[in-house]
Length: 404
Ligand SMILES: [Zn+2]
Image (cartoon, rainbow, N blue to C red; front, side):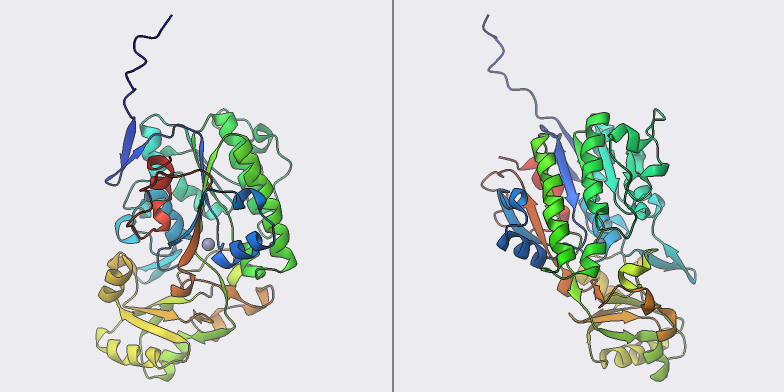
């Protein structure tokens, strides 16, 4: 019998988050935050045939990351779809009332996440992160969120152990190159168990901090994770991938508190917003630092001392940095200091334990890690990319609103 109503298209179901409207996913959708995947890794992997599944993606372009190019601000910009100025997360760490705080609690967010808004509109959602430090932020609004790092301690809402429900083997450790691969596998397996249609998987950049493109470790990693991405595609997912930041070798270090003391500045506190519990990745050294001053009259002297340092490419005051990089002015330093492509910034020589590093320091945080790959498995509508400068925070807009 003919369907009399077949000419009536169903209404497009949407939800909104932070002033942007998104369509509910028509197909299972996996958004991946590929931690530290500098475009150089992708170029090498594609040129050497390491990633045949990802190389077959219909959209292969680049986007700009949020500055500072650190993990938490960029994961949060991707899952909220708005800048740090709007979502409140400008670093992994920040200083409040004279104390440094790790940004892990959802109460830091000043915007909602796309996943929380989608769930409130009836979409099945799921977040899986490699590093447990991100799990609480991703769980904002009651979103089911698990970490590969601590999967052995976690259970589903029905009490089943996560690893058992996913049907996977034991989870690798935080300094094991397979942890990101496991994260993708866990996300795909749990999506099936929980019937999630909008899935976010956030990887770890341990491999990228440790190995340049073309080294054995990174080649093994990209070859292996391509198979997991292929499994997601074979399971019917639309896959979109963007990085939180790039990665560069950074052999030069400047210790800003030491330099400020030598320059006659009396009351200075350098904060490294890259700081997190994973010291073997980067020894808390990145290419952007905040400097807080107790005495505002020392601002010009401090700026002068910092700007004169070799390897420092810019020193901005609070309001100029907030404007230039879309940052929440009250959550950054009085001065924002940027190291060049090969220079990282620390507090003092005594404050950073370089002995924990694996080989040469590779890190991120500044302007030279701002270009990131943006890859989508399926075709987008013809006008999707026209006339816009892509940001990594546009990933969900592209995946949900612009598939062809
Ligand atoms: Zn990262």
